[in-house]
Amino acid sequence: MRAARRCAFILLSALPLLLTSGCGGGPPAATPLLHSPYLVSRDGNLRYRLPAGWFDATADSQASTRTVWLVRSDYAGTLTVREVHVDVAARKEITKQGLLHIARLTAGLQTGSAPGAFAREPETVRVNGRDGCVYEVDGVAGDRVRTILMDTGEHLYAITALVNGGAAGGAIGDVYAVQQAFVNALRW
View 1 (cartoon, rainbow, N blue to C red):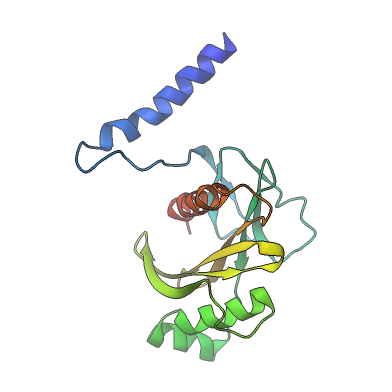
View 2: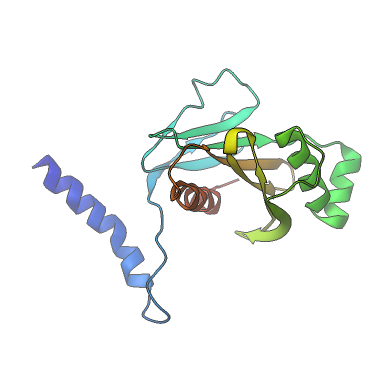
């Protein structure tokens, strides 16, 4: 009986996606399923949804700089949300020139290397009407790291997806898709 309820819940959850997918241009893109209740970030400024197949390690994290820390159940990937603290001058630069310069600086901090060593150069994006910037860097031990910087106007957040270098080849696409769904569902 419990399995039947779970199956019915999954089908009902997927129904809106099926109804809005349309018929043109090929099969619909796969959308990672996020659990419906919103959780509150450590700093209290964000509301987020937990991806299916992931667990929330935020409360267990000893690193107080992590606003949110999610881990895939097979440990092939993590999602980390950290606030990027900027001074008044940097805030003015973001307002005038966008996030590209900040992306170059944060990438250098992530890899411990000189800024500019990107697997994917920073580019601006719009997510839910907000300005952002996305870039990828190669991490240590073959890890892949994709960061989306989001400016809420009051806070600047780096939402980082790390894919373990030893993970199966399809893990990169899966983790990045979860990261995008996670960012799309964020509430400020």
